[in-house]
Image 1 (cartoon, protein in one colour):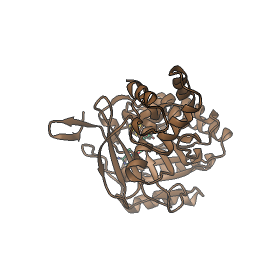
Image 2 (cartoon, helix red, strand yellow; image 1 turned 120 degrees about the vertical axis):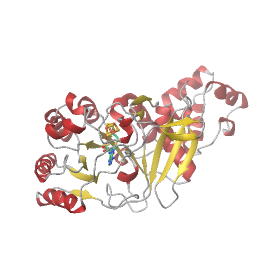
Image 3 (cartoon, rainbow, N blue to C red; image 1 turned 135 degrees about the horizontal axis):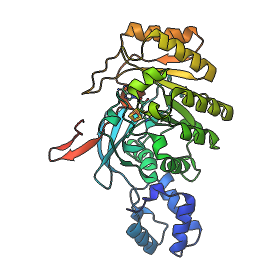
Image 4 (cartoon, protein in one colour; image 1 turned 180 degrees about the vertical axis):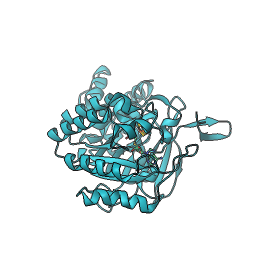
Length: 359
Ligand code: SAH
Ligand code: SF4
């Protein structure tokens, strides 16, 4: 299946126009219809000759995603379910303003974007990892989620977090191609500083992003401050130990001004003892990272338990007392952590869309 227009860069659209015997300015016109005017079909690109529209429509789809379903409403978190050309599904979550988070302005909207269908990393607490990995998303399917969310909501998305389904760093080339489109002047023109990639810790890619010229933010799903704890819940830690991970984060700091975010899900009896908090505090201080504490959200079929509020607060206080900037949100439902990061594979049956069976 050729890439939809939402996955092509200016250079690629220019080459396409050239092969169709069109003048160079046509590339800009096409991209303007896609990203600025946000049209629903190639037919609507009214300043292109009809013959060109016909040729384009023959070769390329405009959009890579079909909207299947929306959950939620305008003043809450909305979850969009999209059907892909091969019948698989992917989700994005549009989150209303949450000034407590990432220092957004009060009127900002954040979209949580998926990078893969499923995830191969199999973290023991995560819904996205449960059913395993299906396939990579193309640049058209990644960038297309943002365009689709804007078209469906009629609202402008200001912040992106790559915290949906999948491990973005395991789909690095497609991710970066999508980011080029999303940040380009001719594209959605989002500021790189408003993009956050979250990774479970793929060390070589952390170094790659540290060397990348754009000021994209990085969040690390740490969830344990020692190998002992991380090994229990995150298979990725068998490949890259915490020492290597922290070394890569030092490298990040040597290359970047943006502060890192360390994400830490609190799971009772697994990673919530105050000794872990003290070790986490030492690392966070040295790395000048802020810590985002996320009380575990229940996933059907998994037995992990969220610690008590008292324990969550005590854990946060160890960080605060050590001078680390730490956030802990105990309210449920509304915020990013409750909605994002727990997306689960869907599949179609005769009864409609159901959650994929768990292993
Ligand atoms: N694969 C990347 C991007 C997905 S981000 C990563 O792991 O960073 C998804 C975020 O939601 C991660 O921080 C993940 O650890 C977190 N998450 C997964 N399951 C969760 C759960 N049950 N409760 C709270 N957070 C969860
Ligand atoms: Fe994959 Fe991230 Fe879930 Fe781990 S937490 S299984 S890396 S999506």
